[in-house]
Image (cartoon, rainbow, N blue to C red; front, top):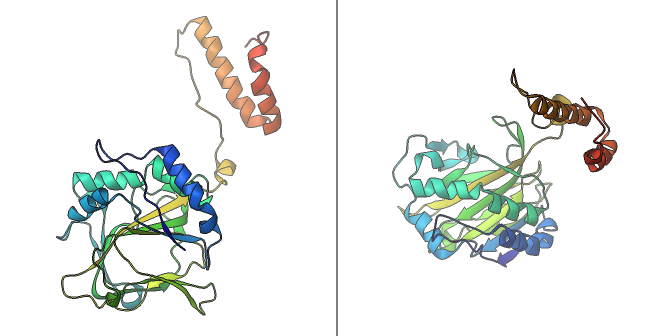
Length: 291
């Protein structure tokens, strides 16, 4: 369950991660992720380079920001603060943009074998999380649909920011079986530990016991959510490629080229895929066609 792997992120010139290296690390951990119990998940220690994570921690917004969301709803979230990246300074905005970028998505796709992941630019429910003394979050399975983007929620990635976290503080992330009969894992929210897991209908998790931290010590994390789109979009929207149009007075050669592009688009819409692929391989040879 617990692994040790550091993404080779550079902060010498912005925030950079090589896509091929990210994919390779994800693939190396994929088997353990996919077959984990009670649902697909992984715990990775030393996940980020320390210099990078320490800079994130030093830029964590201590004071309340404009769009902070405060949860004081008992079992559904107590003494919890959510901070949106848009309200943070330039470095933190860059960090969260990086977590939504292709190298991270490629790492996650390779790790989880879930293709075509989509990050959330609005960070609905995500961003920085901070829970203070006495706070908790009951065992739950997460919301399944992002109603702003109409996407299916598929993954959570949580990165803990808590240096010198003591076991007696509590705040352990609990993973429960699908029947809610047994706690399968308990994960301490220690510094530079990342937990990634599928957000299925029965991916039950939470930290339901009140924190027993000293005054001034809070449980901090980065919360990132990733989604997929439904293929039903092909039932609602014609899937042609870019549709070109010629201007009035365009020369004959350009008009002919545009007619050919439009023909290819409609042909793709109307032709079974297997035949269209054959056409794509031979169309350059069909010089005798005129339009």
